[in-house]
Image 1 (tube, rainbow, N blue to C red):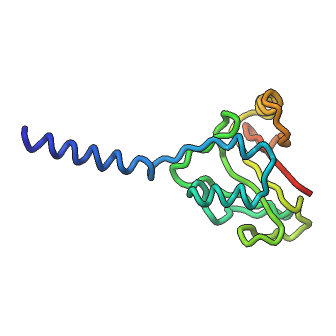
Image 2 (tube, rainbow, N blue to C red):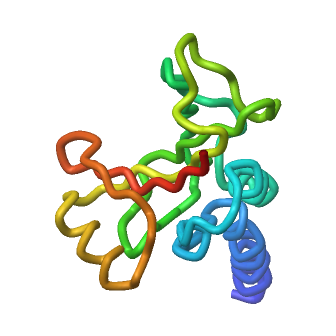
Image 3 (cartoon, rainbow, N blue to C red):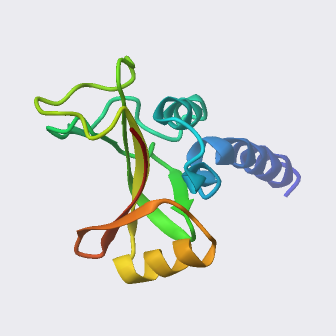
Length: 146
């Protein structure tokens, strides 16, 4: 019995120390107030290791899509984040598509939720982000600067 207690506390301490690396939670509401640049938005997420630094996809309009890092629990206005999207002209964090860029600087997220529910929450909070249907049960919340 005496050997069990120290072993239990050792295992518990190791698990407790591993929790920050297993799960990162972050609320992106403030960043989606559309008062920053895509570079700042992505640099902050990358610095906190909340996104995979390589885009999973680059659209023809140069919008880069990134996965949240493994274990990251990102939310936007209470909705779980599926992907993070953005582009900033002449920024090495982003790759160019083969068409005309959507904007000089644009960023946002794709969340699990209907466009009507997401729009209602954004409007209720006085947000200026663009809300756009992105697919079945997926909605984009987007900020752009010309």
